[in-house]
Length: 296
Image 1 (cartoon, helix red, strand yellow):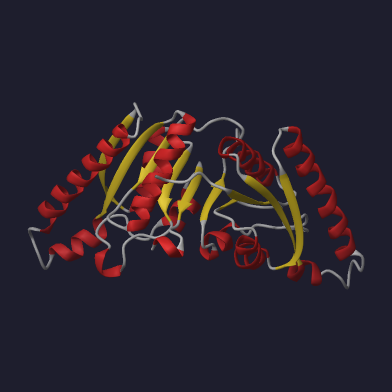
Image 2 (image 1 turned 90 degrees about the horizontal axis):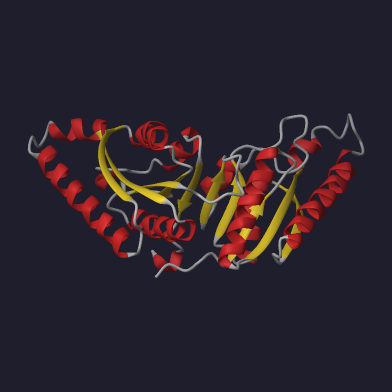
């Protein structure tokens, strides 16, 4: 049984995307009864380049950070959520993933898809890519403007990897909480398939059969878990394009759930390691589920 998120860390800055991430995190913390940490990192490298022009910029950024955190804290406490705030100085992707995550026992990091613009990048900045690459726990990248509402349509991408199975469990747990409809999809990478068919002409039939069987097994699991609205579809093409663009648009998805990495190079028949491509291409929220070291 998948545990609810116990320790959620939201990386914030002064951007609208950050506020959306905060409100999504607040919603999840209330549902999961999670401990909530709001983290704000003053990006030292960017500001240090400007000190010669604006000598007080570090002090100003610090003061702005305190004000920002107080606003987030007040909103969380007003919603009945216990929250702690932390402000650090340094490289956000490193501070958040390497220092704060282990310190607070974080099992979910939430970040906006992009941060404050160049002029306003006093705080976190656009570090979502760095967080996605460096985190050792689940990461939710938020794009939905209506971040306070429940998820309604969730796509769960699967392959034969343990992380994809873990992502499936996390996606189903969320779908049950949100009373969402689910599309389980499995994409056979056409490029990989074409190159391998040169060596084995029967591979296509074998992969189709395996994929359809796996999809049906996952669909049955979802139904047995209590979900009522579950679909399963097999597709071909470039996984990051099919999932993030074609299916997300067709299905009107507001969340895609995917393993943080897929099968290894020699096994990459299906989804593969395309999670980062999905994060960059999707117009909706993306949850990257990552196995903890003790689960691997």
